[in-house]
Image 1 (cartoon, rainbow, N blue to C red):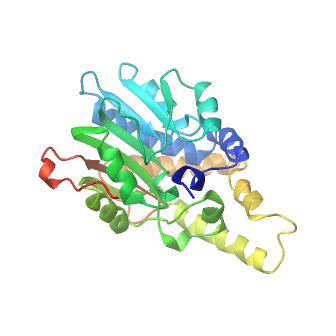
Image 2: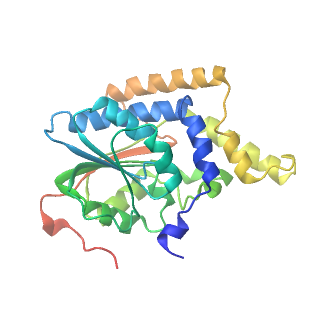
Length: 274
């Protein structure tokens, strides 16, 4: 199976995400965290070039366009369904590309890859390929799902190969030749609720109490949330965001955000994996 075939997703997945991305607290909070970090990394960079790999429906890159209207922004996505949806949201250049075989384009100051790495069977090879598209001294900003304790049917339906810890993410980045700038968990308040919810759903499935619902339908149900709970969780995560901005490090979380640098010293670089 080729890398592209292994990453193919049902068209319905993009449609479900498109519905959820507009208002769901998880996407809104993650957008704010990513957008703030990207802005800080590029705000003082003249003629900055930003690339998002695996831009999906264009939800994150739309946020980046709002915050950095003068930057050159490019979105790359493997799936045509995502690109078509993104085209309705953003004005920037969009490219269909395989992350394992990126175009020979002008190098970027910053590359973002948000909740994509966990879908890749060879994360180190992908990260090494990404480095080839970064300027020396350029940076990578990345988010991944955290903690194998949260592994469930949801990860299997989503096509995840793993959930990361800060240590395993750091290991992959270092093996790829990057220097770590920051590597921290976030979305801590979601951890107990997510763990209980997924364990309870798995128990109901084992006991045959989920009716005729398949795993994909159960996973899509997690994208639907009442307005009240959406408000409550959004408010709680907003408090976490303020603490993080004050320099407080969350001890754990359901996601990890890392920033890594492509070293100026090419002797640090590792050869591309064969």
